[in-house]
Amino acid sequence: MQRALIAKAESTLREAGPALAHVYCRGDDNGISLILYMQAKDLYQAESGARELLGETMASIGTMAGWTIAHCGADLISPVMDTIVGDTSD
Image (cartoon, rainbow, N blue to C red):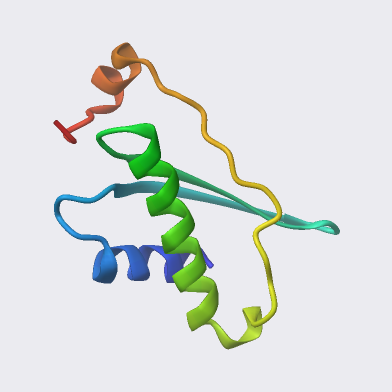
């Protein structure tokens, strides 16, 4: 799933759009948890870019037909953290 997300991000996200910086994936009996680290100009662009990317990736993987997104949320990273992790979205 991580490889599929990265490949889809590289082929579909535009230069002006959000950038997928990192993907973390964990599975258990309840399903798969994905954490997408997005760099974007604002929260709306990050959330909509992540949802679009995940939806397109799920649609392109035949074994994920019928899967749904059960939860979607965002943690805000302060400008100080942007500096630490090397944000280049400005």
